[in-house]
Image 1 (cartoon, rainbow, N blue to C red):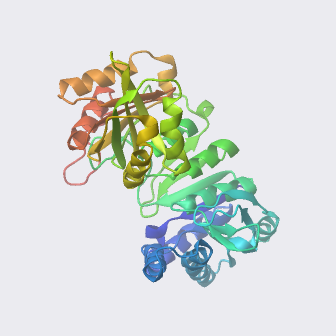
Image 2 (image 1 turned 180 degrees about the vertical axis):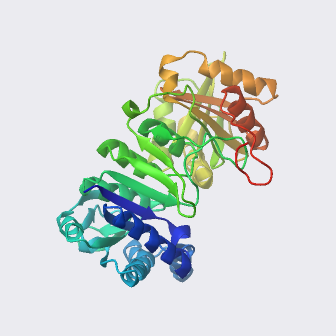
Image 3 (image 1 turned 90 degrees about the vertical axis):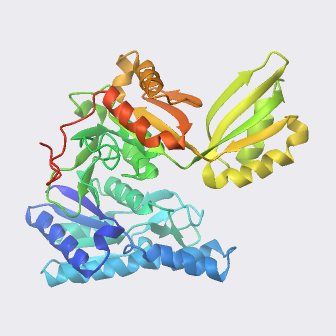
Length: 415
C-alpha cells in the first residue's frame, strides 16, 4: 500500500471550513488505497500572535518558555483536524512532536531534527488510522519542547516522510506548484511539472518562497520525493525529484529574486594578508551571514570590499565593523539597503556555455547596472538597485525563453 505524508500550511487550515476541506482531501487519499500521515501548521496568524505575546511581555524572553507558547498553535490544529476526520468516519489520532518523538537538538526557536522514531506511527497507519502530527515542533535532549523556526512544518513533513519511508511527501499550500518565476510579476510564467532537488534548493535559498530551504535540504539528503500542490484546487502540482527523473533538462528552470539583502562596502582597506579573515571573522562570531562578496584591488595598495548581508542584520553588521575599524584600517563604510538579488537557476547550466553572458546582455539592454555577481554550478546571481526588480525579472524570463502563452484576461487560464 503506498504511503504518503500530506502537509498543510497555515492558510490551508485558517478556519473550520478549511479544516473540513483538508479532512475531505485526506479522506479521498485514504479511500484511494493509500496509507496517510498528516502534518499541519498552526492556523493562519496564530503563531504571529503567540510570538507577539512573548515579546510584549519580555523582548529578552526565555527561549525555552517561548517554545512552549508558540508550539501550542499546532496542537490546536491537530486536535481540530482529528475531530474533523473522525466526523467523516476516518479513524484519526493527534500526535504532538514529543509523543512520536521527533528528537531535536537544544537550539530553542531554531532547533534541528536529529531523529524521528516512526515505529508507532507506522503501526497506527497499518491498522487504518491516520496520524495527525504537529509540525514545527519536537523535543530536545532535556525533554523540553523545541520549535524548528519559521517554515519548520515543511521540515517536519519531509523528515517524517523519510522516517516513515513514505513514497511521497505532498506539501499543500496556497500556490499550485513551482513556477518559472513569480506569476504576479510575470503573468506568462509557466508551472513546472518537475524540478530537481538541487534546483529547488537553489531557488529556495535565493528568494523563492514555495518551500522552506531546510526542508529541501532534508529532501535532497534523504531522497524524499516532494510534491507542491494547491490546497484549494484539484490540479496537478510540481514534483521535486532526483535529477535522473527529469527527461527534459531546461538550461534555466527559474528566475528568483530576494529583496531581503543589504549591500555593505568598506572603502580603502589596506590590502594585506589576513584582511578577509579579520573582516569576516567578527561578522561570523556575531551570527551575521555574509552572502555575495566582491573585492576590487586599487593601485595604491588598498582594496574595496563589498558584500551582502540580510537586511535585518545590517545594524549589527555596522556595529561589528565599526568596532573593528582600528584592526581593519578601512577609510569608510557605505551601506545600501535598497538592492535586490536576482538569480537564474538551472541544472542545464552544467552543460551549456553562455548562460551568464545572456543574463548580462539582457540586463544591459534594459539599462540595469550590475553591482555584484556570484555564481555556483547551477546558479548565477546579480545584485541590482531594488527599483529594477520587476523589469529585471521580466527581461531575464524572456531572455531565457521561459515565457508561456499569454493568460486569458477573463479566466486567467493560458490561451
